[in-house]
Image (cartoon, rainbow, N blue to C red; front, side, top):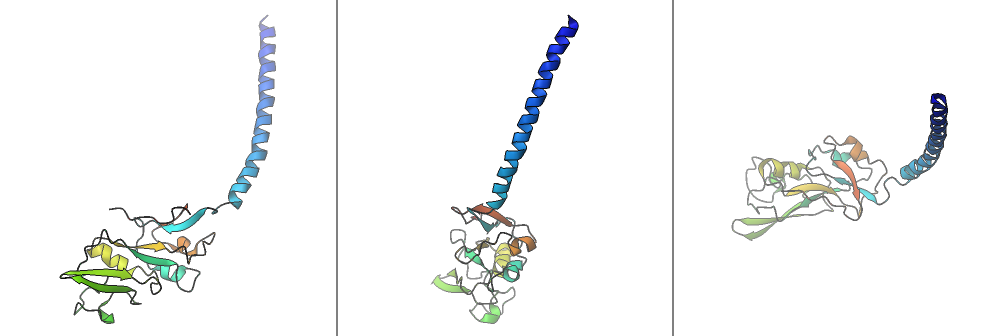
Length: 189
C-alpha cells in the first residue's frame, strides 16, 4: 500500500514537473519577446536630465555634448536667490570692482546679465543662447552662495541621444532618464 501512494505522488510530481517545464518554456519565449520590446523602446517617453544634487560642475557638459554648443544650460531659481550685490555665481573671486566688466565675471561667455532692482539688490538673468553649460557660475553659487544656479538640459535643443555622451563622461554620475512629461528636476532646498 505504501508503494501505491509513492506511485501516485510520483505521478503528481512528474505532472507538476512537466507543467513547470511548459511554464518555464513559455516564460522564456514570451520573456525574450518582451525583453526585446523593452530594449527597442528604451528611451521612448523619457529624456536625459541632470540631477542637481549630484552635479559636481566638472565642466564636461560644455565639452562632451554632440552639439556644437551644449544643450546643457544654467537655470536660475529666483525663489532661492538672495539678489545679492556680490553674487559669487556672477563675480570672479577677488574681483577688483563689482561692475559688469568682463574680467570681473565668472562666466566666460557673458551669459549672465545683472539688473539693478534697488539698493542693495540685483537680479541675475541667464541668457541661454550665450550659455555653454560650463558650470562655472553654478560652482561659485554653490560654494559661496545659496545654490540658486544649477545646470539642466534644454530639451528644445537636446537631440535626446540614446547614449548621451555627456552622461558617459559625467564625473558626478548626475545624468538620468526622466519622464518626458516632467523633464526638469528642481533643485531641492
